Length: 167
Image (cartoon, rainbow, N blue to C red; front, side, top):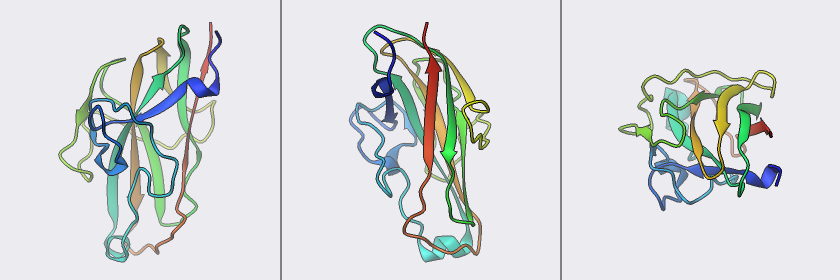
């Protein structure tokens, strides 16, 4: 059975039953998917945070939900970065091995150790996640940086995209 879009399951971190994006700070893969809703992964930036500036981190897992096939040469990129001028999103491949539990940060402003962040914007420039066999996963960190003095917005969205080859 070939891998299709429905096989790309983006799961939260933060514990086996975590359903709160704000608690996705690494650790055990949740059985709950990442929400695509506004404020589903990061909470709204307050006026005080926008004035002071803020950098926060979240960890998700790309889970291969296919029943038999391996995601070969899986990649991740930001197909739409935030439209707000004072905010940027970056991504990084987790430091844990394939199908392992990712490190947990002390809080949402603590950077994960050993993760390099960038903002690839196309499939061709996406970050390599390697091969992900069926039922397994790979950790991806997302960093939101709000520049000090930024304005606020109710619609500050972004899109993380995944792709792979199939054998």
